[in-house]
Image 1 (cartoon, rainbow, N blue to C red):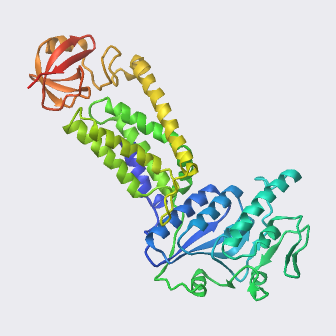
Image 2: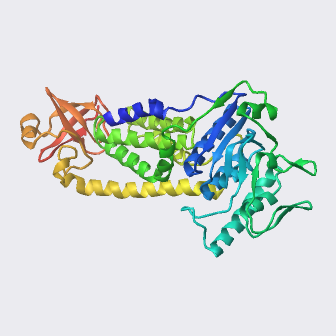
Length: 461
């Protein structure tokens, strides 16, 4: 429990604090600073979804980046094109490479008086130029993709080639915009230049985000700035390692289910599921409604175990709700859009869940087979001759013979599932039910006492 509490305190600390709730009608300013990476994609996707759900007036991207990952840039552009809320770009002060391509996925571009945009030729992660054939392949694919992105909001697709392709001369009308062998970079003044009655790229020059909001005609109640939380970067690894967190949660729940009370296994399960849902929430993949469905399923299972043991209907529904919540927590759904039931959107979530279930089944069988043999777990698990699962604090065989005998009648004090506690006179002992679960308060008879367990059966009322 101390570990779980420490994590909760860390989430509540300023370094990990979430941004204030986005309000209806406000303009949300999102920084796109430094290298473009998957962590920025996760952050931006979360804010876009929150802005859509809240009914924000607009989102303004405050861009100052030297570039970054093309794959992350592609995902960011897909997020911007799916947004229901209007998104604008403010180049403040540098939109090189990936930054230029992201800006062209927004509704309009505004630039600081001293700023530049362009130079999007792909290079290796080390900054070195790629081999010629590989460069041709990458430029061919990504220039085609980003040309279609630029066309969505009326930008000249030829600008993408001018930014990316050294081997292509780019013209706008009769004017050669970029000669072959060069990569285009535009200053703010060049980007707003009118050609054939239309700005070359940017809609205007602005000194601040507030000025951008005014130039774009946004009558916002207020301008709210959001920043990545301290947990934002970790969210990337949580989503990548989702099967491992699911595995930890399932195994912890299995071991807790097989033991009386709440202990180490339950704490591990709670921590794993907490990190799983928190990471996917920060990554913009899930909302609180999915977490609510998960806990509803958990409540149904607990209700059946406590009040209707053996019925299985509530536990079946609860299990389905819990696994459904785990699955949909990994689905990339955007508010305001129809639910995409295509195979592609469910491929990764289903794969993660199946990996976790298969590994959990293997781990459960190994635990049942080998864990009781380890001295370290002598007090955690009943020995293998016991008919069913583990228990804490098993009394010694000598105590069995002195306290209870075959045929003695006792009262169940904690539900036998199948392990729990029963009271025999003044002694409260760990016992194992021989068959179905036995609810608290029922009478049980000792079938066998000695060796390593007290085995009991329910006495019919």
